[in-house]
Length: 514
Length: 105
Image 1 (cartoon, rainbow over the protein chains, first blue to last red):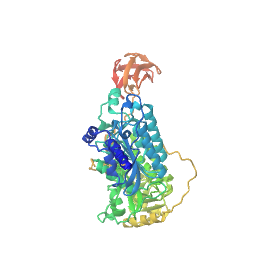
Image 2: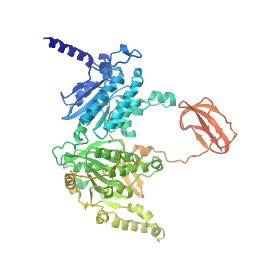
Image 3: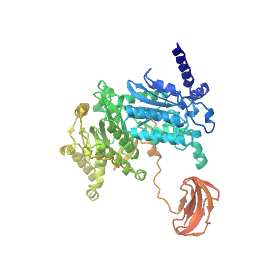
Image 4: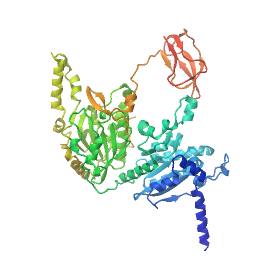
């Protein structure tokens, strides 16, 4: 049959392009500990779910001998498929083809799948592995990047956008991940920077390796550019798959509900928080004591550890957690942790995820470096984000909630829907020691035994103010609950707030703090 | 994943908290007020020209050096009336950001 010949022709054409940059280039890729673009897509997506588009796209550049070059699929693979049944759009740059460099058609393929993802309202996953702009294509490469950045911004808050850095992502190219919701990096494989080590060396005389400048650890621990750190590509893909199960497919839906499950009995919520408010504990244990199956999916685990963010489920429904971490830096709020909290709050608000805030902080971190770094405007971002969020907001005050920290951590005044406090809560304008220095300064300095007077005043203040009852007497706290009741109260609050309707004044958008 | 498991102490508003301290916090440089008489390079580059010498009188607004950096010839403008105490660089020398260039008195 004539059709047989045609089918064979198609298969032969496919075979050629599927080899990417050829056997040698593939060997080099493997030698760097990296998988090929195609292997990555197959690992990430459900078996047999991948539909590829634009396999036969070719560049039409002529300058600099480009007319003599055949670049398989122009160095990028696009298509759609599913992850645990959730539809996703995906692109993966192919480093074996011209170093995965971005030319006009390469960028057209990416923008095609981005338009597709937005139109169909499904999550977009971008696997970045590229040497950067294809110099031979000149301004066309720049145009390509610009078109990608525009679409990242257009889709922001409409569909989830995930960037996976599985190779170099440098210069202009690195702005695309920065515009997406979550950035995944892998140790020794991811490299992100605006100017690379070679330029830094020649122009500035500073010597630094690629890994130390913009490797996975740097972005996970220091810069805050990455949200998830993995030691291998496989671990990274597991993280991505898990994230997809927690989030909705677009901003018009809620995340898929799963079977509820009780927290594991090894997390005894009554035994976690010490009575002495100056002693630390791991707030993640509290979270695991209240979420379904004690399954807490932490985000930005290595950055600004004094504040914890991540997803869990309550009664099968995804919730976002924001919690002070007394184990790190006494759980203070500072520049980095404010940025970390604020953006996550806005993410949850954009994608219909209720926010549960656990409060135990002594205040803001003092220091000239913090002040000069702008802790004022960074701290204000948290207030802005909480006020702006219209998703259900639930707060549990576990222990210390002093001064500005009390206000900022999703207080009733920022329109939290439910505020609960444990009996150990200390809701006051400041801690007892600080109060002794300020409020009772005169009594202490004029006393015959100042030390004794100070101790006495601290005790008096503790008794009168370091508790939840003053706030409860004013209705600032909805209920004082025992730790073991926490899950029950939170589950009920989430159930009844499912249809929450709240109107914000009409505006194009606000002007968030700098 | 964790490199600093030991507990330290942090004073917040007169209360001493037992807690882990972050690497950033441990590495931070305590604040030193700036001495306006010490002139640092604000950008890495090359000294193109030096218009002053040790002992010379300078006035606010005088151009003291030209620093070639980021494809621009940057003027180093004197910020106070005084005398040049010492010059730490030579014409043609490459400097890094924060290098001392000269000291006034």
